[in-house]
Amino acid sequence: MLDGSKKRLRLRIIIPAYPAFNIYSHVAKKTTALGPVCVASSANEMEGWDVEVIDENNLRRYGPRGDSAGADHEFLQRYRPADVVGIYGGLTSTIPRLYEIARFYKNKGIVTIAGGQHFVEDTIVEALNSCIDYVVVGEGEETIKELLRAIEGRQDTSGIKGIAYLDNGKVIRTPTRAHITDFKKLPLPDFSLVRYAKIKVYPVGRIRGCGMDCEFCTVKGKPRSSSPERLLECISFLLETHDARHFFIVDDLFGQQREETIRFCTMLRDYQKNIGKRLGLIVQIRLDKAKDPELLSAMRQAGINTVAIGFESPIDEELKAMNKHIKSEDMLALTKIFHKFGFLVHGMFIFGYPLKEGVNFQMSAGERIKRFKSFIRKAKIDTIQTLLPTPLPGTELRHRLVSQNRVYPIQVVGWEYYDGNFPLFEPDQPMTAEEMQDSIRKIMGKFYQFKYMFMLGLHIVSFPALVFFLHNIRSGWGRWYRPWRNNLVRFGGWIIMKRWASEFKKDTFHKRLQKAKEHLKVK
Image (cartoon, rainbow, N blue to C red; front, side):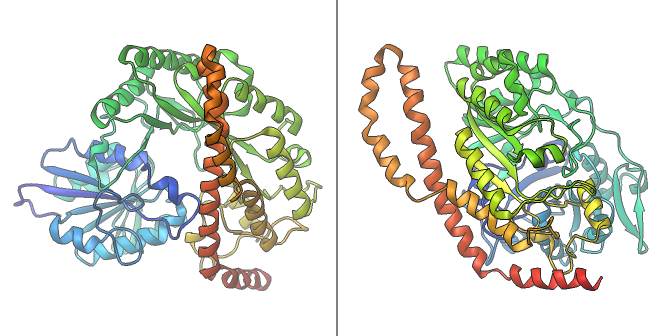
């Protein structure tokens, strides 16, 4: 229970730093996570509380940095002490850092709370034994208010739904809290609560949940949506208060509710016309939405210029084994439609997905790499991201692989490696774990190369050629800008990949991998 004599209390919500430099680090410096901001905005409505968010991956505005990674919490606690600390567990790879932060504050007598997609089943017990006082299970906007009142002594903890805690060494799980469906009662995300961060791309959202029920994904359940008006209000508020121009709509599948999505796009188009400003938006969308020209047209008019598409795999045999009901040539045709409408396409791939028992399919790592490179070249994808399958806690994929005794033990290969860049289980034959990891570097390394620096220069020299498009300057600009932008991004990607490879050489993962393999053999 907190000291009620204090005039005001402070809640600090922390987004833990990535365990090491990786392919996400560059992007993380330009944005932040939406979930912690939503929870902080809700808590900020409480009387007597000051709330702040510290994103350890984005401390570019005078942020106090620690000796190794993340923020200097000794400095923060000395000059702006927190009474309660909430730590975001949305990314499994940041869990070791989460526990490190929790231990620091717990040793100072501060109440610690954790929440996020990582915390399911056994990981809740792990958290409660790692200096976490309370684990919030599920959405946190309503739970955080009740929990803070309980910490103040104004409410009984046992009556709060959706939390877990220890009582005399026994784990207490309260009843599940119902999903939020009425988003009108929640405040708009207040990004001014994020201290020290320079945000260029603002995350916003309208739909929570996803009905695709993918085996490897933690996002489940029937989609729940707020109104298009609310999302537009959020975007306009950020433009007016933060001069925000770039947005990432975090919905897992943009266009799930077709009619409402088109209505939102129309409203956003009209809003931009009225204020005389053009905004840039990125969305995640299914490849088959290319068959809906009305939707694509509305998206382009709204300022959506980049689509992130989960291609998963370009290998026909693997697509068939995964019951995707699509062929690579059809994927190429649909991708061409997105390009025809003027979208930049970011392709997301999973390399070496473990097939279910009974599926008769084998392919060497070398042949897989050839198929990936060929598809990416033919599809003319603007940017790519190739990751390894990650058996995240609570997913059907993890349950399946654990039952097959294929997952490397956490005590050997820790949570910090759960970022999609490391092999975490025994792959399908004839591949080895080492081959699987090396493959994604070869695919990404082929795409992001140093040579694009020279091609970038050639495009700059060709800029005066736009004079030939004075009759249609918009078309001419589009033809010039896309290759120039792609060359710039691919050269930048080469720099990131080079640094990531350098950091990987310093890591001890290869030693851990050998121990993990031996552990499975003994088991």
